[in-house]
Amino acid sequence: MPLPRLHPFRPRSLALLSGYSRERLLADLGAGLTVGIVALPLALAFAIASGLRPEQGLATAVVAGFLISLLGGSSVQIGGPAGAFIVVVYGILQRHGLANLLIATMGAGLLLLLMGALRLGALVRYIPVAIVTGFTNGIAVLIALAQLKDFLGLRIEKMPADFFGQIGALHQHLGGFNPVAPVMAAACMAIVLLWPKNIVQDKPLSGVRRWMALLPSTVIALVGATAATALLHLPLETIGSRFGGIPRSLPALSWPAMSWAGMQQLVIPTLTLALLGAIESLLCARVADRLTPELPRHDPNQELMAQGIANFAAPLFGGLPATGTIARTVTNIRAGGTSPVAGLVHALVLLLILLVAAPLAVHVPLAALAGILLVVAWNMGEWHEFARLKRFNLTYRTLLVGTFTLTVVTDLTVAVEVGLVTACLFFVYRMSQLFQLRPMASTAVPEGCVGFELYGALFFGAIGKLEALPDQLPPGTRTLVLQMHQLVQLDTSGMEALRDLHRTLAKRGARLVLAQLNAQPLDLLRRAGLADELGAGGIVTSLADLKSPA
Image (cartoon, rainbow, N blue to C red):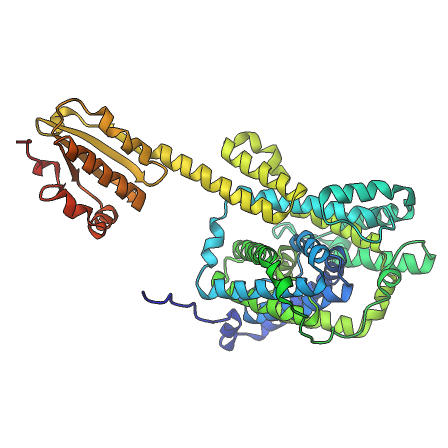
């Protein structure tokens, strides 16, 4: 058996070696600067919400963001820590510890690299949209729930990883409510939501609002909250009070401690990180393709390979999982980015901020980051899908609501596993319903023959209809003719059902004739030996070739 042909490693950045103009370079520099500033508060917030230190979020944005842009298959996608990972990372961290989280992330990187090399990028698109929507909305709810601690100013040393545990911890510590915290968080949310944004290309802003839109709303909220906390000495928990500040350098390069016992428990977490990273990255790349029709479409396999390398490298600096991020990618496109250079600049801008301005982060209030993340969670969810559920069939509603519920009350791994199994069962049921056996008119076959037409796909989920066929034949039937020109697919279970039908008829002194087979069923019957068992005249190319039974 020949080995599968591996996907060539051709990063999109190689296309810059020819035809890259000065105008594009200037546009990419400006876009990279903008995205770098936008990414700063998100990198801090995602790391803290995941239960990690803020510098680990910055390290991820710098290292993984640089590698994804340098080696990826998209012209404009920006990579880094993503909100979708918060719940998963927090759960792994609480159950298995930091070292095992880093190992799981590196393992997920190797899986992503292998998926891209084996050309499996297109398979991610086969996950039903109901499952994607369900777990995306579920993750958004869990992100919002996790921010209530800092939103309310509660001093909870260690939040549980599960939904009901978090509800219980919040209820238990409500007595420590700090009224200043929700005011600060709400003010940051208002700034992020109401600050002018140039998001409609055919209706650009003008005047003062146009100049205001050049400044990212999240940065305005973060700077304003930090200044107010420092100048007014507000009684709020800050990055400095919880973490002691941020070092002015990337974390030291180190290999996480490994143990065989620990690695045995990381199979499911590793698969979860890889699957979620692949889905998020390729969905983001498809959004970018729609927004940039003038640019070449992304290469999904190259993108997965770049994500794999980035996720293997980032944990060596203490980083968390990374993927393509829709908010930063769209910001890049709106700011004029046209090539991976913008993503490289964005990572270098974050590195410069880390080296120069890290000490200023000690005054950043955690309530402000909670407010920003609540907006992120709201924007992440596709809440309109719940209102539209009544328009769709039972299958779609069951998958979406079931995946959403399981994501919230159990975890993402269980939700996706159950969702995929349920989707497969629904698919098998629907395909089995599409398969039909229709009696043919007696005038269409020679005298003494009984004919049926087969429609659809004869596979393991539909063979029951074929197995019941002998009991439907009239007494004295000498030949059963199955016209198969509208049978588009036959699997081995269907082939064995045909063999059993042939042997049942032979015991009754009758024979089976298959007419007008398509290429795939005919090839399978020949390879399985059933064509030879049917003997001469057992397979005919036309009903005209049929003969009356002797």
